[in-house]
Amino acid sequence: VTEAMDGQGNLFSDARLKQLLLRIQGGTPTEIIRDTVAEVRSYAAGEPQADDITLLVLRYLQGRSERGGHG
Image 1 (spheres, rainbow, N blue to C red):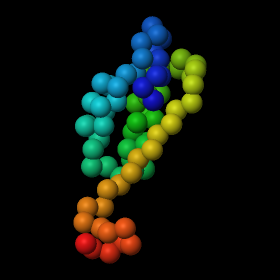
Image 2: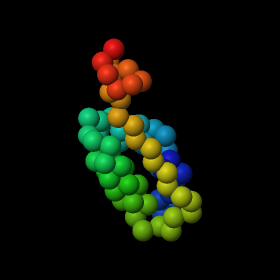
Image 3: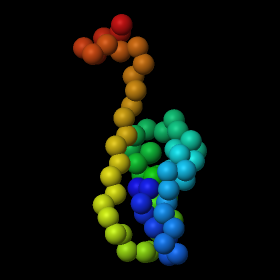
Image 4: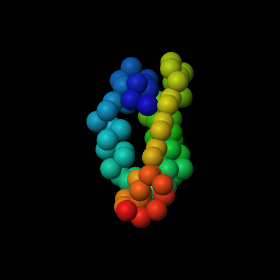
């Protein structure tokens, strides 16, 4: 994600990703992935993709034990 480039060769960057994630925090994992991919595509504005785009979104279930109960 952070290595996506715009037409001038500028990287999407860690800082831009952090700003995006702060803006979309609270969404479901599916929404976060959808919004992130849309933002990267918009930033690249049709430039050819030079590398793969990998995303992993985890949902933290506070207060859950490893066996799925409360604890």
